[in-house]
Amino acid sequence: MSEEQEKNARGASSSGDRGPEANAESADPDSPEAPREADAAGTSGDASHMRHEGATAFRSALKLGVSLMLTWSVALIVTFKLPKYFGPLKNGYYQFCDSFTGTLFVFIGLGVDTYIQREVPVRPKHASDFFGGFVLARLLLSVPLFAIGAGILLYRAKPTEVLATAALFGLVQIFMTLNETFAKMLQASTKVGGLAIANVLAKILWGGGAYALVVLKAPLVAFAVPVLLAEVLKAAFLFSATRKAVELELRVDVAATKAVLKESFPFFVSAIAVTMGSKLDVTMLDFVNPGVEVGWYGAARQIANLSMLLAPIVSGVLIPMMRRAHERSEEEFFEILRRCLEGVSIVSIPVTTMLALGADVWIKLALKDEFLPAAVSLRLLAPTFVFAYGNVLLWLALMILGRSWTITLVSIGGLIALPLFILLAVPLTRDLGAGGAGMGVGLALSLRELGVILVFLYFLGKRATDRRSILAVVKSLAVAGAVTALHLALARLGPVRLAIDTVAYLVLGVALGIYRPRDAIMVLKLVKNRGR
Image (cartoon, rainbow, N blue to C red; front, top):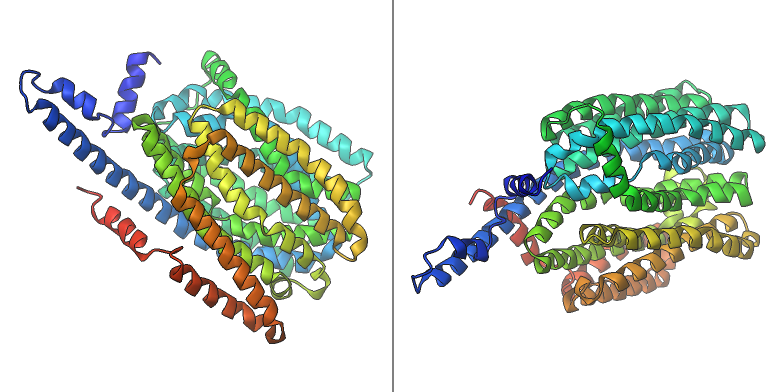
């Protein structure tokens, strides 16, 4: 694409890009009122554009939010049902197959999804230049990965049912990677209606199939089949939606694919580090302490993962808005980043607090008593999700700022740190009783996430935070501490105290100004004024 074509593409995708300078050029230079009129027009245009961007982001978030609520309901049922059916040992097998194949097949991503997030919001038709080439490259790369995976499992003498289940999960990973690419294109185009529908349909198919297999008392390997079918049908649906959204064409352009591969290489390395880092905990626990400990920890991980269901909204809705804001003004971009970090913090900290305080209650409600040792893992896993949401935002900010190699180096550092932390922590905790090994892995994961977020903040500098956002985090942590103290003081009340904890958190949050009703009113005004 030539420089002129790129400018046209950006202009078409962002009608408010012409600021005061552009308006001043078109004004009469001999008129003394020209600069003032240009400034007024530019300011009005920027404000109107920001209202439009905010309303678009809110509508996209609403669509994805509704679909996530429906998929969350299905995921909740299956998440609780499968461990009960499998028991700790086979649940460990199931979690291992998912984690192992996810770690192995991370290599087929090739970094293109991050490239899509950066480029497609302003160059939608560019997606057709490289999509077909990447699909072909992924298929070719999958062949040796299947062979490597089979060799590792045979070397470790895994049971036949684990080999078969892992093979099916390998196919699942191929389609999941393809679907993630479709999702990034739809999110970049802000046309997420099809994605929302596909998410719901896929989850219903998966959940219904898994539930039917539980009723039929099916073997372990059968439970990978509904996951695979759901991803295949989702891919067909999303391909159709993406063709309409960005006029996607399936062709192989070798030159364009090579160029995008080169541009995506730092994202590729970073994605490997991030994905392996998110999957490595279960895989490593199976290596250092195989057996029921993996099943207990895997159950805790499944419950904790439910708190991350809003991550697609954070990345899918904010990226296009932040990308276009950066095109207009770096200060506007950082202002959005600061407010997003504030919003993520004041929502994720209370969720994390309730997750940790009620860990034993959630395990009892969701699973059998034989999974109670998972509660200690769940408590130590809970903080990772405050850090994880922050890391998502900071990672995206660095990506938009063109700091791809910074992301890569930090991600590699986090990947190296996790197994070292696990190898140090597990020997210290494994003798503390049932679930002790999982406790060590949870502690290691939390420490890794905290380290990554601090390093990201260092590289972004002071503009990533301001007094308001820092105060919101400090106040939220103070309230979390007060609620924790209240929870311990009311120990004799049992599970009832969780309701008291929740009310106390909300009251203190409003009293300290953490939650501002006027912010909600502002969002509603954005939607009301979307057509202006």
